[in-house]
Length: 637
Image (tube, rainbow, N blue to C red):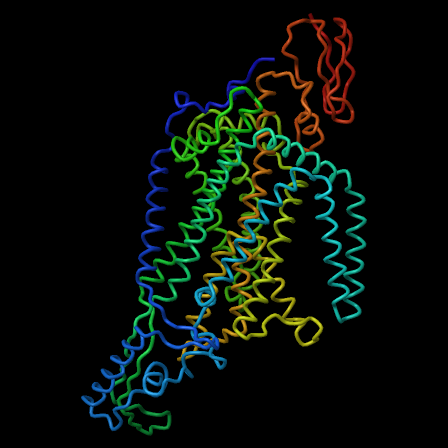
């Protein structure tokens, strides 16, 4: 069989002399973006001041620095009122001036005195940083432990995760007070049990694929050192991101609001006069919000970059182990190529994914866009755009992933790798893509369950720390609706963690800015705890997905290695993974010729069960029996 032109050699070019710097402009942009991320972040940290101090009884008092500024402001307000000839030169008796004169925090904190009236979810983290720090650290430990367990017990864990789904439905059925709902959830649990029995072969296959991935990881344990280096950078930047966002709410200035004396006319024509007034309040400088938005986008780009850097490192190691096991890069060499000569291509692929996530964020459903008679047009158009985006997202993500693997093997730039990738994948996979949905679903669900547990732990901890009762008991019929609404909110955000980071921060800013009264209060005791807990769960989900991604990246790399071997006429008759691949739907099944030129050599055929089988050559002129998916042919000289 002649080797196709638009393919690559079955080897990984990882040595310095074999590679060159690719997509350099994008590498420069990424480095500038990282520099801007930390520059803006530390500018925010440097400008932050301690707003409140927590006393021994858990109540809040204004910090000494802001107390001095507030005293100065209130005195200036009193002087200004005197200049205006006001009958009362005492500043308005609420907010900072009330605290300066009486020491009371009535208009600065909530009734229990433990949380600011104008506080946000990041105030919850700033006042008690041990909550996110402890739980996110626990998520890191659990993520590493989970991957280690998957390496040893792949198939049992596959079935265990499915069993947990049934347990979840049964638990909801037991706890639901409504009898009709109980029956529905029990039926769902029973139907899902039947589904598992029906699809048990698919689950067993997922276990086999994950086991093969685990075998590849066991043979390349040194790779984990390089991945842990990337993971450490990821964790460090995640903590910096949380620090920058938390400190951004502490960038406050004491400002004075002045209203000169004047008159106004009522609707009935009556003229009223009012005296001059002034008061002091805490205000956030305008540059902080702009910096926050830039930091958010750069964080999104960074998250995608760490995902792609992990894939590049895994592909270099697993690909070398597959093609030439005696000549593999060290962990340091694989990471070095990722962050140097491949930096531009990795950054470009990450930018594509970041843009996709940004488009998804802008297409997110907003109810106020569909209020009124126009909803019959806008709602269907929005639904169609979301469906189209879902299809394009999967296509772009898969193409970007396999393109980066081809780049890691060949050293070509992004577009050169994309061209080769398209040729290789379309020859061997229907529609040009291959995805093991069973393994992906198992790993995604595992990350989901762990993150959900951390979310509810954070929720209960926040409630206890601030004296709130936002975690409703579903034993109370009045709270059942609230519980399910918050549960749906948490489940949705954990399923789309990258998108959720932006959604949560934007929701927090919108509520505190537009839904607050003159004192900045907007019912924080009702929504801060569940939203802050969801944020902790989302960050944990990102970490779990990163570790699960190591296994999925290994599987995808093996798929590409198999396709490249097929292009280069490599004998796969003894390949265990080749037999597994044939069980997947969407494979273009072509018998693989052996490398032997002996006309009497055995040939590799694909049996009815999809597994490779050795066959004897047929005589010239005899018909070749037709197999499923193969055309009838004749042996020719």
